[in-house]
Image (cartoon, rainbow, N blue to C red; front, top):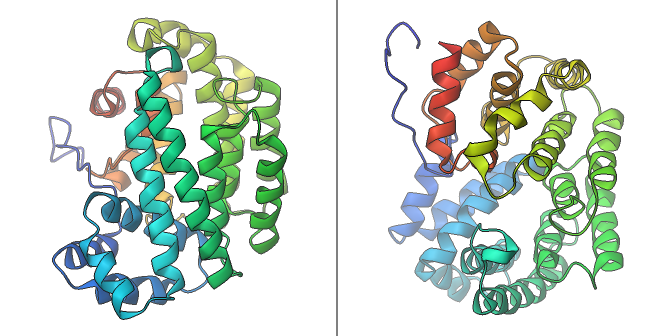
Length: 327
């Protein structure tokens, strides 16, 4: 890859990233063939990480263009996958209504719509639980909905998390939401956030995606402590944090455990976690050669990698900066 491209590749921002089966099924569904989405999710089976990622992308598509999901529901009214896609679509719309700005830069009207749509998503997720009680993903959507009112729902959050991990102990999306909910910019503290990341990372089997969650905790910590509102202007201060020896050691340990069962796949959360590791290496000025190899695997698939936005105003800027440094 690096021999062929003298400039960074044009980032592919499709949320499906390297999951080309997902991309094709979603596009067919949007064109009216809802059975393509049904067949894809059925084929995923009980691979909960892959199922969760695919449902998330399909749910986002349904939020923006629901006609195909309407047709699916009309044909199969009690399909549990339809129910969870409804919930996910509402949660996607809620996130869009709130926006990605800090709380002080978010209007009252935005918060009100965020709360309203999140409440609808919570109710829809309960129906999905009833229709498919073995699936952890409806509980993930329920957890996400609680970001709208986490101060009053902390006990409920922990209870819902317990239901999800009962079904899949090291479910990546569940533990990702715990790190998010318990970070300081939402409803917790740095200590609670790091515990939510490190405890499942330490307990999970080798090769598990949750082994990489401490990287997210470090990104969140740097964002909060070294210029939450200034982003790129405080990049040097944030990067200096990542150059601490203890931070580098933890990054390396997480990556070693994640890769310990063989090279992780690209689908599911594989691309996102490669972006996390490449970004952490860049900030730490560590393992340039290994980062080149990661970016060769990533190729152009940026999707939506929110952590680049912790350090640059646009995700593409961060991806290009990491690419140029590695090269």
